[in-house]
Image 1 (cartoon, rainbow, N blue to C red):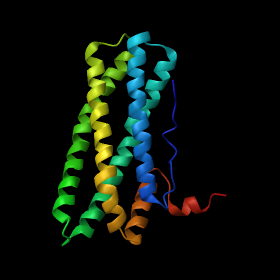
Image 2 (tube, rainbow, N blue to C red):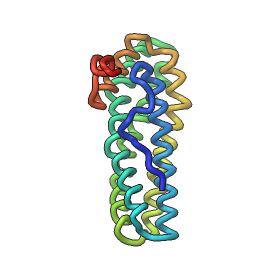
Image 3 (cartoon, rainbow, N blue to C red):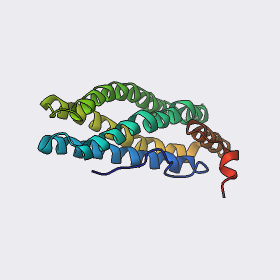
Length: 187
């Protein structure tokens, strides 16, 4: 089974939109890994390698994914809404961000069910309902990231100003337990 270190940022905080997209790439790899793990359990049942993979996936979806969601809800979406005030595309992009905010709530609920299934499958054979549970979560998670990449990223690249990007990067760093000053001190 694959293991991905979700604790280390995939890009630098000085390029927060690149980091944001890299987080999507990591999230999509995690969702694909969850799918493969579900298939593995269906064929082979629980085992040590699958248990370790499940533990890594749980860490991603309970540590990295919530930080990414907070990046959007605390910094990215509010800054975009501010830049959209009075813009012709404000209504359309505002509706997209509302949908994505709603997706976050839905994904939180789907993850809780998937987590329970994940925990069960590390100890006992997979049940038919577990595969469906994983599938619903994976499909929603992948669809959410696809919408952000296709619909929101181009607008963010166009609308956000350097001060917005700096603040976004600082917020992202803080949520991951570091600061610009600490990053500047590294060799």
